Image 1 (cartoon, protein in one colour):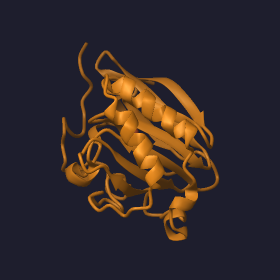
Image 2: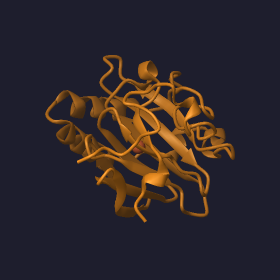
Image 3: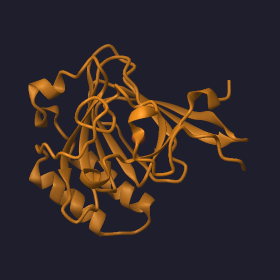
Image 4: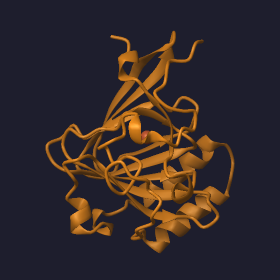
Length: 209
Ligand SMILES: [Fe+2]
């Protein structure tokens, strides 16, 4: 099976110029890096997440356990400040709330205004998302003859939790609603050190009609 062309990667950390400008997807501000931990993640949640990560296993098994933790402890949008919850017209915002000291996982919260979306991308490691406010639409792609084919289009309301583990985690997330959407994203890597959880960004022209 031939791989589709990518706009970055593998493990390309110079994402600023290849479609991320203005998205804020890799930083706490538009186009920046998410290296600064702004805090705000409840200690009880980070301790439960650490327990789920420490139990080890395959990436999918770890992601599934992390997903169970988020279902049992749904995060509240109130962990963000009113300013953070308001979103930013220049692009969706990523706030790094926690980076585990041993580098095993990071917790971010993303804020999306209506219509804002990520590029098509995959990740360096497992990733678990939980919708906290509004609704998000998730598109999942498969590689098909060197191109991308949409295999699922999920509408995720508040409380929906999704777990991804590479390979096969090519996806896009957008706020298809009419109000602000907020979601927690837990990644199996140290965002404060690597700056981004994104492995590759894919050219949307690769999608099969
Ligand atoms: Fe993602």
